Amino acid sequence: MLDVRRFRTEPDVVRAGLARRGEDPAIVDEVVALDAEVRRLSAGRDDIRARIRTISHEVGQLHRDGRREEAGELQAESRALGEEEKRLDHAADEASARLTELLLVIPNLPSPDAPDGLDEDQNVVVRVEGADPASFEAHQRVPHWEIGEQFGLLDLTRGAKLSGSMFVMYRRAGATLVRALCQLALDRNADLFEEIRPPMLVRTETMVSTGHLPKFEEDAYHVERDDLWAIPTAEVPLTSLARGEILDGADLPMRFMAHTSCFRREAGSAGKDTRGLLRVHEFDKVEILAYSTPEDSAELHAELLRRAESLLVELGLSYRVLDLCAGDLGASSARTFDLEAYAPGVDRYLECSSVSWFSDYQARRANIRYRPQAGGGTQICHTLNGSALAVPRVWAALVETHRQPDGSIVIPEVLQPYMRGLERIGE
Image (cartoon, rainbow, N blue to C red; front, side, top):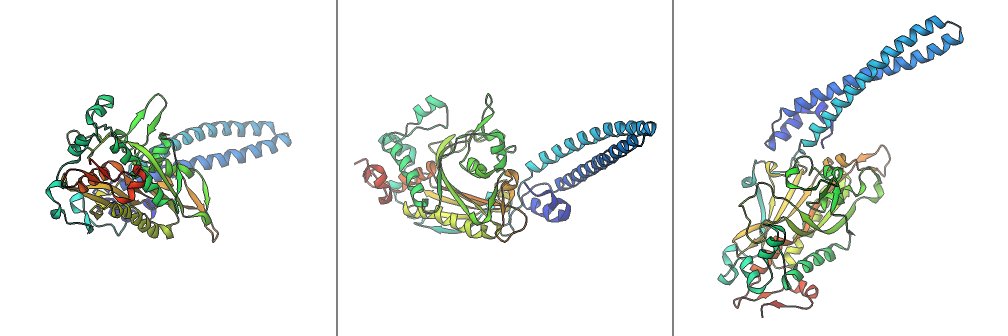
């Protein structure tokens, strides 16, 4: 969340940042007023507490001096003040809770470097890499769901029978390809990133820490009996690894990676991109994430982008890099670059990675701090993350791109060791 002190000291900056996102800046006035109310109630309560402590000392002295009647009068005053203190304390707690609820739904401020714009149509294409979309041949223009059905790689019918629409099942070499892609992504980042295998059901506060709750509750799967949430991305548990902790600045940056299943209800997507693997409720993904100091965050952001991009290069995919405009940023992000792989069979660029810098927005929600090496008080960490590789759309782009004139699919050389030596599907 945003630091409430920014609403007090630089409200115009906050208003301008929210306006760039297309948010109503009037919410700043609500926060300022509620924050003032919290501080007024808290100050009044604290003044009364101080008076009660003073009276307690005075009563003790009066009893020692034998002045019982005066002591009784002060005790009566203390009891009346105690009731007022309870009232103010309750009111302060209620106002503070309302303030927290409000802050939890206000998005992060976009970086000054994020381009202006209010929707995805105004995202900036930084560069395009690989073959020109127009250069792909007819045999590559077959959609992945047809290729998957032809070779028994995808079983969409049985996936839906088992779990419902938008759940998919991979089979034979198609299932092996899922695992191969994830293992490749893990191996390529094992030089600096600690591998984690986190739980895939997490507590509410874990989802709140990344900003997935309360704002995106409708997109999440909730196990109500146990009050646990199926993770929409490994970003959720990885961000909370140090929740409520104070880290040693000498240990930063800290880098983590995880291969997990991810679960998303995709609320509001009925009838949109529901064929094949374009939009699914469950998928595998390798996430890379870092805690950093503010000073190191820009360099780490560039590093995460390079790592995610290098995998697309190794897989022989064409792709483009987008710099998301302020209005298309995720609620928690200050700056995001998307990687979109070109899938010739559906003739579309498919988003396969978002590499984001969250500034201190998530870490403040999660209360992740560090002690600077130079000394001084603790500071809030910065968090960054990206999809090293998200399977469904990369899988789709890969089988379409590498389809041959005879209909077979050539396995990229970097994947062959993970495919039990298989070099081609459909020979």
